[in-house]
Structure formats: structure tokens, C-alpha cells
Amino acid sequence: MEQTHEQNNISPQNTNNNKFGNWLKTSITARLAMVGFLTLILLIPLFFIQSLIDERSRRQEDVVQEINDKWGNEVLLYGPMLKIPYKIFTEKTLTNQDTKKTFTETIESIGYAYFFPSDLNILATVDPETKERGIFKTAVYDSQMTLSGSYNLPDFNMGEINPKYILWKKALLFLKSDQRL
Image 1 (spheres, rainbow, N blue to C red):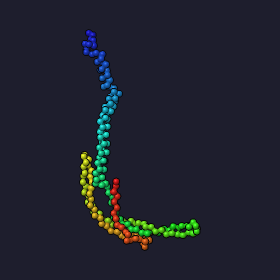
Image 2 (cartoon, one colour; image 1 turned 60 degrees about the horizontal axis):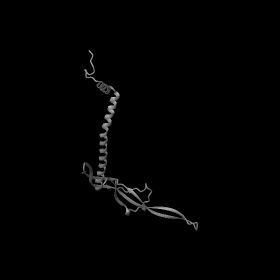
Image 3 (cartoon, one colour; image 1 turned 135 degrees about the vertical axis):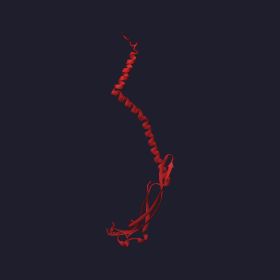
């Protein structure tokens, strides 16, 4: 008995669909194309998330800067330092153009020698505090410091400074801070 396509419920159109479906299932090229297509589709949300991460990162930097503007930035403390002025004498030879005479002029200027303490003790307490702005947080610090130390008699021989030209009455003891902006 001969059966027709209609009797088996198989039409030429179904045969073509089965060939295409069969090709999709068995073809490596088709599978690679589908994986590539799905990868490209899944990259779209990744770009949106990356854009959100970049925006939040910039906003966090702005918030930290805004809080630092109100509380102050990082401060580095140098010292205590002893600043001792001394006289420097330089000689300058001048020639008078009219008389062609040469004479020497002594110029006095002030130089400074800086010394750190030979012994320094620092007692510091730092109180951190968290500041918030929206979803962002940053830490600010308040500190109390006590410094004590001692100096040895400065040795001016290393700088070839004559001890009789040291201006002891104008010596200063100071702390220097370097506030980073």
C-alpha cells in the first residue's frame, strides 16, 4: 500500500522545517552564531551597569570632596623645628668705569639653619567620625596632640658657619603643617 504525504500527515513544508531544525541542532556554525547572539544581547545590561558604576564613583568623589571642604583635607605636621638665623657675608668686586678703579664691596645677608629635636615624644589621640551624604560615607578625623622633646646644642661646623655670626636672639621654634589641597 502506498501512502501519500497527506496520509502520514507529512507535508513538504514540514519536511523543510524539520531540515532547518535538524540543521540548527547539529550544525556547529549555527550553535556558535546563537552563542554569539546571546552574548551580544547580554552585553547590553552590562553596559548600563558599567555606566551606573562610573556615575556612582564620580558622585562619591564629589561627596568626599564636599565633606573635605567643610572639615578640611589631609594635614601633615612637620616639626617642631628650630630655626636659627645667621649672617652671611659675600664679597663683590666692582669696577668704576670712569676711573677704572676696582674695589670690593661686602654684602651682608641672612641665612637660616634648621634643626630637628634630638629626642621627640608625641602623644596623639585621633577620634574618627563617619560623615554621610546620601548613600555615600567618608571618615573625618579630629586629633589632640602633645609634643615634648629636647634639642642638643646645634653643630654649625657642618655648614661652615662662623659661630660669632649666629643671631641667637632671633631663633624660632615652630611647627609647620602642610595642608594638602
